[in-house]
Image (tube, rainbow, N blue to C red; front, side, top):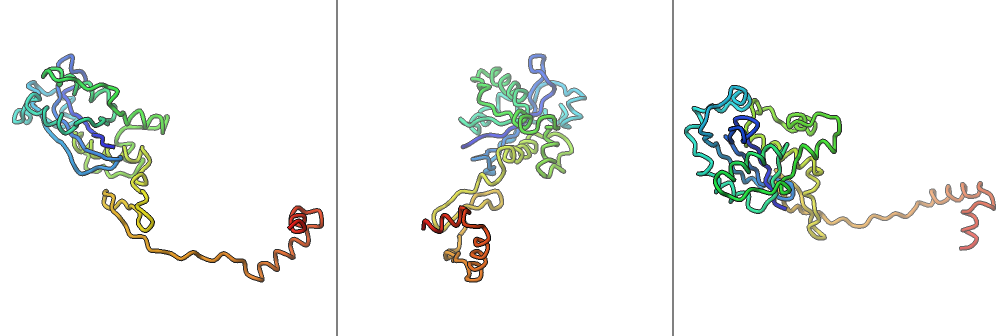
Length: 233
């Protein structure tokens, strides 16, 4: 099952009031495991950068002027996503901005039912607990020490690891590969691993064990179920 875990950075909270997308980061996962394929793009918002947004992601309007506008990069994003589901933390926010930008360039928008919201999954699994990306990284012992500021690609990579844990962890990648092989997750990739043949082990009780058992049964009396069974056999 192919899915795209993604994150966005923006100039604010609402595209309908003039806020714009400034960064997209995507990580491809198959059967909840990252494949190593990513899509990352900074976007020129063609507007100023509010101080509050700059403090969050550190992307200035001056820096972003050197990058293409959304109409010049959306085709690459669409191709990378393909027909996969879109996975995001607080997905309604990211989908709102992606769809606003797609609508502006005349492209068909994504159906919101296509999105998987990891925030909602986390809230169901851990009600009453903090469910920010940082909190979930801490819960699952995922190293997020490089996350000094928000960054779309780094956050998507961390979210891909969190998503795997929310869906059951790396054991999902373990499957039988035949009578003499099994599957092992090594360095994030599923690989065949040889399994040595093992002879069946004997499970016959020792004479001393049988004698102790008979002595115990003798103490149960004639009405004991075990003695009734021995008589009938």
